[in-house]
Image (cartoon, rainbow, N blue to C red):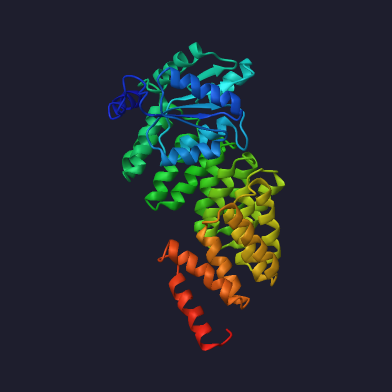
Length: 408
């Protein structure tokens, strides 16, 4: 009965007859030369809109900004999280469609291939590959993914109904998927999502406990349970579930980012710092972690630690004017105006038209009674963008101070 219902559900899906080479295709390959070769080959066989990147975190960001992606080619081994972890994130992210997924593997052992296929990869492209290898593999991935009997298509349908806020229909589909694969934790996590949206929180927790019992390694079950508990102010158990999800996926930046976002909604800054420090302990090479830590320590007015972590972030991104601005503000807060001014000058050397750096430098100069320099800075900003922050008001304030001959 459930098989027949699932087949009927497929009719709701728009199944294209062939790969649309006019849509976007995304390539995730850490080696720059290989990435360039693959992009070149793809364009030769007709894919003109190729997005490419070296890690999965950036790929996910690009997918959010480019909705109509027809296919993914992803290397198994990547900086930060692996290609498999990326696919798992893609499958669990309601706001993104999961297109046909081809994985490139440089060590094509049977174990590697089986691991990839068991985790939902549609096709394998073995390195080194030639131009003639690529098109058949993409076509095969396309056919496998759009096969009416492919459960992944049904999962995508449930996500579609979640996006449309049709939670009853999404839940029915997840229930059918549960019947066809009773040992899987994945449909249970989907059912829990529906129950959360329907404000049936205790039921959602019970379903997640069932999912964890079936698969104690299913990261998203712990992550979702942690979110529920934290929102219910069960902070200790919520944090424990977040930590368990991180333990299972220690180099996945999404785990830390999403967890910290949830924690910060309740303004639990110390808990957020604890999670981010786990990233450092796990040696996650991800500069935004340091940026987030610096902002949290800034909120807590621990400016010395804020400075420490911004400097860590700048090692990887020395030309980030965002980091440099935050560093300069922190120097100003501990009273080191010399370092603050030097840091703003560094930011402006990188980007002379960075109005935020200019404005902050102007404020600093004004606080140091350098009125002439501050006036020149604000006049420069006003000429470029009269509506920028309250630069007009600052100009009048300085002019009034100079006219009155008073020192602020």
